[in-house]
Length: 377
Image (tube, rainbow, N blue to C red; front, side, top):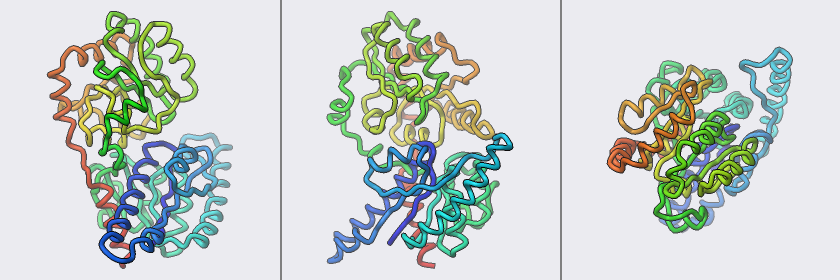
């Protein structure tokens, strides 16, 4: 069995694809254990990722041990006329490249996980009669999935609200797939990877795979309002490349303990060492923190399509599972107050943790079941 998983650009698109790949391989291993065909079945389950050279997939997928091939793809929505023409030319090239890859790999199914890198491959697979699925992680789909939804055999949705954007007879509510490592956390390994002080209140800050300028800036302001707690709290902060040096120097100058890095590959371990998280409200992040029940201060990205991140965050806040600070209201003092409140109130943290632990664990299984049924047809 050969599967192509296409798309990426951000962790929110890529990591659900990795979760689906893990489920395919896990089933192959389980079927091998039950019979004499163990090695053959494992060898016959091949996963190939498709992305772009400038997306997060270019550095994450090789670390995960999967092969990856690259296509030309660029964003179209909200671009200048020149960039739209260039994006159209890249799309034509991606169609040509997709034909070559499909001819070489000969997949049994193609799964699109979102982003412009998925469009050429999924559309070409559809035209060749190969079973196709797209994953829609958000309540409001982006341009790529709205377009592909007109053609593909099935759409795997995270939110009920998304159904209205797609043909109802091909839309399935599966949830957003979560990587196994997020659920199978190892405390000893986590503290060896992130050598911070065990038992000290830890705030994990991240703004997505590329960081978030407003979150980075507000944390630096917040530190000035938390100086009296610097012996009691510590930080693990993913900054993105641009703000890394500035943020690292600020922690050092103000005397706060913690680890500052441009990018964190070991998210499961980062969640494990954290008492609370400060982050955006993307669908994949929320799927992860609700799967493990992690208290969060959510700062929705204000330019997300149809403001879906605020919608996501507000739902969690209404359930008592998170606190929300809108980006336009984000100031150092406001963020410091929220951190201080959760630091001081262990009961509130435990209540948030209970309320947050509602994530769907079987989304990857549901999507692989869906893919297998399409392949049988």
